[in-house]
Length: 215
Image 1 (spheres, one colour):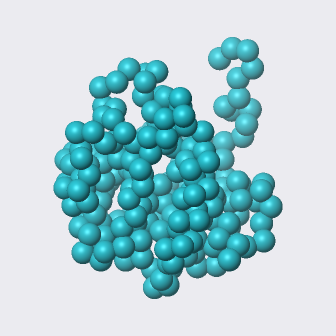
Image 2 (cartoon, one colour; image 1 turned 60 degrees about the horizontal axis):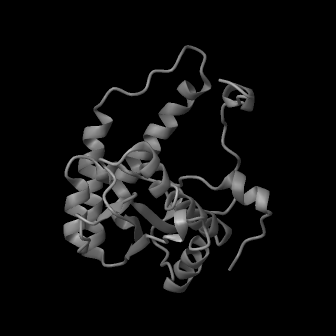
């Protein structure tokens, strides 16, 4: 069932949800398929439609994927974080971001479903233009999927940590993905959200990132 949101509200309140994912409520296949059908309407370079979507319901496979994610997260969390200049509002946001990220790493296995979006071809050694074209054919579709989830009272979190080190290969083995031909684009827990009221996030003001005619 869709919730009553305008297009602008969906666009301004869809984000990575972690602590407010309801891990105890089942998710229906047909709802996820509705969202994926909408995702298939996203732009695709050269009309290639080279995307693939692996939705994981099996508890053992979800646990195995979550274990990869958690192990990689512990390594990632030990790395030096990005440095912001004094007074940057993002400094104040980081403790909450870190806390919710830790929560997801600990609880990811409980998600009723997980989804791994994939794109045909291996992208680690392609040039900028080829890489931009390939990712530009997948990421808009993934974002459409997240918007569609939001409009139906579900949420997800855009994560890529399982891909570092040998994580992508391990996930490919678990799910039978032909790693030499297919690139994974992330790992998305799928669940209904606890409540459907979300506010726009605090972002840098437009004037900090907008450039007219030159940098």
